[in-house]
Length: 133
Image (cartoon, rainbow, N blue to C red; front, side):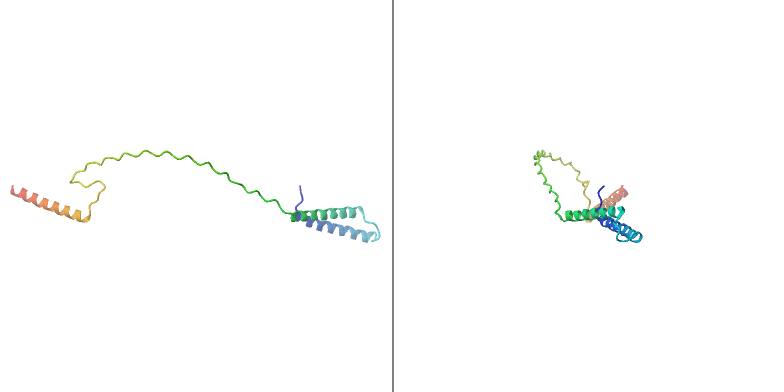
């Protein structure tokens, strides 16, 4: 598994702390003139490798990155035109009675009043006729 770029600095810091501890232990126990121990050499080598890896990654990050290729949409083939629909035959209008209003026609206020007046007149005439006979 590759090491994250951000974690290299942290690893270098940890390595530096362990290296410093190993150097201080050697200096206190044996003196500074003594050659470095195996632990110190291993820590120094690991630190050098970590710093090289960090430098390599930083150089790689500065390089230009590849850009995504733009997708070219393919043109759709034109659809053939639809055949025209045949003309509809008009329906014949139904014959309406003269006395009745058409089914969808509403009487206006004036028409209602005239019809009401006609009905009253017809009722009066009918009442007079029945009284005479």
